[in-house]
Amino acid sequence: MGWIPLSTVKPFEMDRATRQRLYFGLGEFPPLNIVNPKEVEDYLRWHPKLVKSENLISVTEVYGYYPDLYEHWSRNKVYLIEFLTEGLPISSIEVAGGLDLVKENVVGKIVDPDVGISERSVQTKLFESGFPVPEPRGLSLPTAAEDEEILRRAKPKSVLWMDYINSKYTFEKFMLQLCVGEEKVNSSFRDISDIIMGIWDLGFAHGDLKGEHILRTKKDKWVVIDLGEAKEDDYAARVNDLYILITDTTVFIERHLRSMNLTEDALNHVLSDLADVLILFLEQTSSVVQRKILSDVWRRVRKEATILSETIRNIVVSAFPT
Image 1 (cartoon, rainbow, N blue to C red):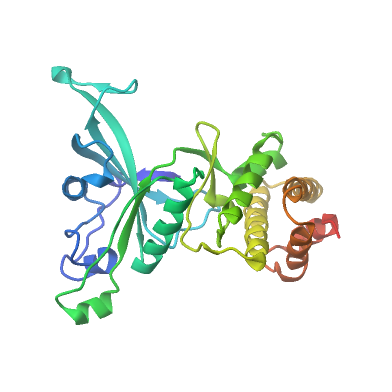
Image 2 (image 1 turned 180 degrees about the horizontal axis):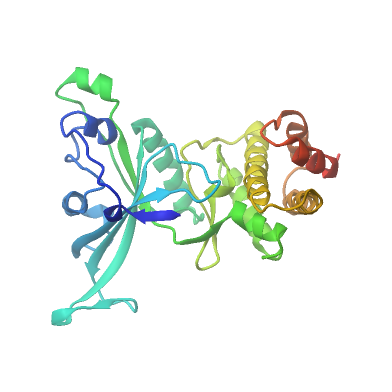
């Protein structure tokens, strides 16, 4: 389903005194129910750095993310805020009185404060290095509570703000399209390999490099998101990045294929194609990654990837280079 407007679903009500603090913390920024457009609008006016243009007119919609079929629910609440600013872009909306309004977006990710600080630091460094990640907009941190008991029980959250990425599909959906013949191998393999290598070259490992965290934009560029588990780069972290990417993507694709009610022979044929595509991707990567890393990725898949079904394990493992 993707992003859904919260105005179309039953409002999410919070107890203003306690439960709201559980999600949004205390102190530094005003009480904010992020599903309430008016409250979000007031907050954006109070914190103008989150809006690139100072000419904020109004918040028009708040969206929540509802995962598509076989996607995972995010451990963090993520909201898309759509607002209007005054401006003169090509895509502007002509309104009465001659005023041109521009629809813009900002994403708010609800995280633990320590995670927010770490993710903002990594994302800022990558963005400033010209790396394809969402542009960071700011981090709203809770401050000391007037009631320490509430603070201890509520575990207040922070809000990590960033640019919205208008995506076409994820890496795992791209790989699925390759398997069923709806997409052809192109420069994407090299582009994605370059992104993974680029993270490592800057001294980081992603830490949670799932296929759903690599997005293809409407402008056909690949972008990496969700850096909350990024860590200092080392050999083991590199192996883990590729291992997570391969196993998570494989599970996603197999679930989709099994939902298509294929015959067993047809399913095995497509799963064999999946194995070939995975190997092709990592062979592309191997031109810039130590061959030993790839060997250790295969070894982990053969020995540890219990999340894969026996069918896909037999097919994929038998196709893996030794």
